[in-house]
Image (cartoon, rainbow, N blue to C red; front, side):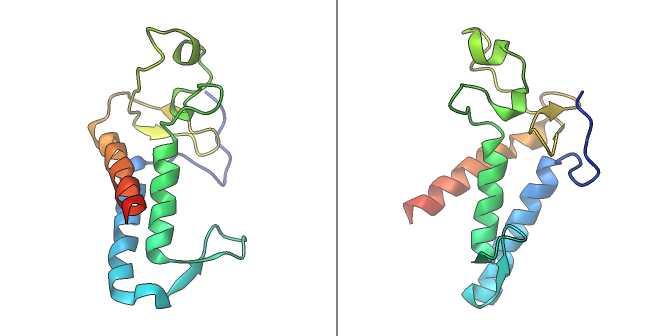
Length: 128
């Protein structure tokens, strides 16, 4: 298990999902008038709905294969990248490393299946 940095601890999926949902609801109230810097230190201002979409994108990104076929949630295990019997097996970990995205803790957590909602929310926002 890789060490956690003191600034980027474990990512708890349900909590992040609830935060994104709350940002969407606050956007309904404040509209585009309220803008915040996202990511911090970037100088880029976004409304709260855009910040929520960025969170959904990052959360969903834990499960999307990169150019090398590696999913961050699976960590460096080559079976999930190379073995055809393991390649499409996606597990839903209890929480994730804030640095690498590797799934940590118990596997097959029902609440982490909120990832599917992240994909749905992203698809819905792109179709608008």
